[in-house]
Amino acid sequence: MNQSQEEQFLTYYEELSDAIFRHCYFRLYNREEARDLTQEAFIKTWQYLAGGKEVENLKAFIYRVANNLVIDYVRKKKSLSLDELHEAGFDPKGDDQIKAQHAAEIRELAQHLEKLPDDYREAVTLRYFNDLMPREIAEITGESENVVSVRITRGVQKLREHLHHER
Amino acid sequence: MNDKFEQYIESAKRVVLTPEEKAHIHAALLSAMRATRLEQADVRVAVPRWFRWYDLTLHPLPIILGLVVAISMSTSYAAEGTLPGDVLYPVKTTVNEEVRGWFAFSSKGQLAYEQNIAERRLEEAEQLAFHGRLNDETRAEIVERFNERASRVEEHIEKLEDESAVEASSDFEARLKAHGAILVHLTSKDAETVDRMPEKSQIVASVQARASSTARQRIKAEAKVKSKAEEPARLAAAKKLKDAREKIEGVRALALAVPEQKIEELSAPSAVPSEGGASLKMMAVVMEDQAGLRTETRLDMAEKILEEGNKKLETGAYGEAFVLFQKAQRVAEEARLVLQARKDFNIEVHVDEHISDDHDDDETPGGEGDAGGSPKGNDADDAVDDDTDEDSHHDDADGSESSATTTSSNAPSEMHAELEGLVKLKLDQE
Image (cartoon, rainbow over all chains, first blue to last red; front, side):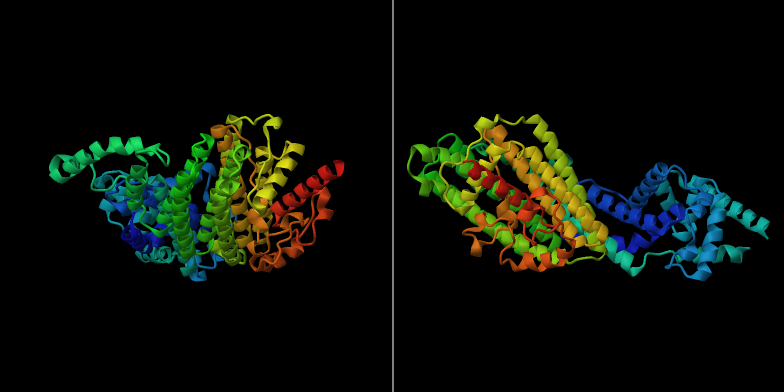
């Protein structure tokens, strides 16, 4: 790994860090944990590359690493249901970085997202919060583009239903 | 409803890292990059990107290069185990080692490379001394080559900043001190039969001088690191704690594999070349008194330092914690090399901790007799120790021996005080 490869990777970091962080955040609903896992995802990816291994799609690869880290993390913590998170103090309002007006929405959003099956939730968040195309999501999740598109459509549909019932 | 959904999306997109968080991760990433550079330099023979099997089938140049490599590899391989005075030794130093140098790209990579080569020269000196092959010619060659590399190591360390400088200087210092002690032991055997101590100690003197200058570099770098208390320093300290723990555990495992020798085999060097050596002799006397002051004790010492570091970590003195963790790692590294010497040469050496922590070249004479091992006249250490005085405590029974300068961050000084106490005890008995 030479200087220019390091610089290139740092550029990737600048471009992708917020998205990876957001991706982790909407799985963990904990700013600190999401930040730590974001950091770890980038470092692990770098170490992988530095080990001489090649990666075809770096963006997808970093998402996959982050995904695996989240899965491991959640597994270690056993459960992370929203109720438990509330008990543990999940409160976006308390998160200084998120302004009050958005905090309420994020909390509501989290509640709705929690009701979706994991696959749907992942597809919807990647599509709408991180602006990824179905093709890109397919590369991350290892599913076909078609399956991803179906999940996005159904996920949004279910979200709409939840929102409708709420009214 | 669509509005609501879009509102959600908008809120979700506002979940971003703050500039501070971003900078923090950026710094951690840089540090990881530095670490991989060092690791790569350590592996040294990295396969370049262009050298892949499928390339061989397509391009004639790599094929030719491959053949050249294959032919020269046998010579090169044969040269690897040679020592000064052997026919193929120049192949080892001028071809093999230089080629490895090509793969060390960064400044840190270069540093690790130079450091390994410098250490290699010392290992060669040890082998020669052990087999009784150290003569004027081989000794001069080793001293020259060692000094050349050691100077480059020092230059590279100068280019590093803060934590990296502490790590690099600490690591090199540990290796120099351990090899210095091993060489004192091995060359002093010759000195008993041949009265040529001044020349025999030429290598030892060079190594000890380098150990001192590296220790000064470390102390200088530590002074910068110690005052750090911000978030990146916490991360660096946490990482260092992990590394130091792993190191200690690794050496403990190694200690189990290399059983200690009987106590009678412990011997002080019969002749000592310098005040550092005098101190070594003293340590060996102590060791005869207390068999426990060996690998296990040294590792326990390292763990004690680790605990001290943990206390600093808890109070938010991250820089000081880092320095202590690094110190624990250094003590463990020295223990590892002592074990290695036991395995390779069947000797028991004791590395003088005094050099690393209370050493002050300008005022060394008489330093050994100074109970308490206070950091005399060392501005860098004094400056930081002042900060830690409020935390000072004396947790051993001999604490009264130590002056007020024995602080919680000065564990090896405590050990030194303890050792001095034992020496006095022995003298009193006599």
